[in-house]
Length: 158
Image (cartoon, rainbow, N blue to C red; front, side, top):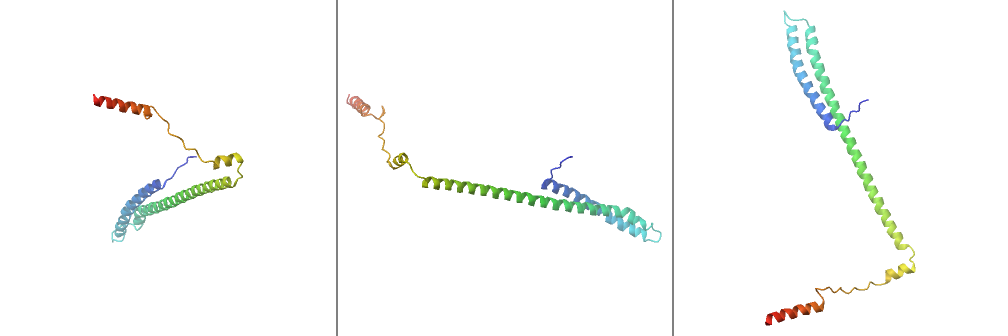
């Protein structure tokens, strides 16, 4: 069984085609019916069945084509509304999932704060961090600095 995926755009394009075809048929059918009816009521006219036989089918087909186009437009609108409802439901589920994750994270952090602390952990948490002395590199060591200044002074005195 073939599966036809219908999108609102596809349905609207079909509706456009059918409405155009219907309007063409109605545009041809009404004047033809009026002309044949005028010919049927003339004194030496045609049979009264001619307007019905030749003018009726284009009018009926034009009406049916426009009716089908209207139905396809209604289908496109309902499909769009269904897709929008599904997007809203998906977004709502994602928001609820994020909110549940935040709540779980907050509960975990609250539980971690209220959990009993062992002595090792208490000592590690309460002991202040010792400040580190900056490392002396070759560029900033006092000797290299003095040597650089002495070299610069001896060069300038010469």
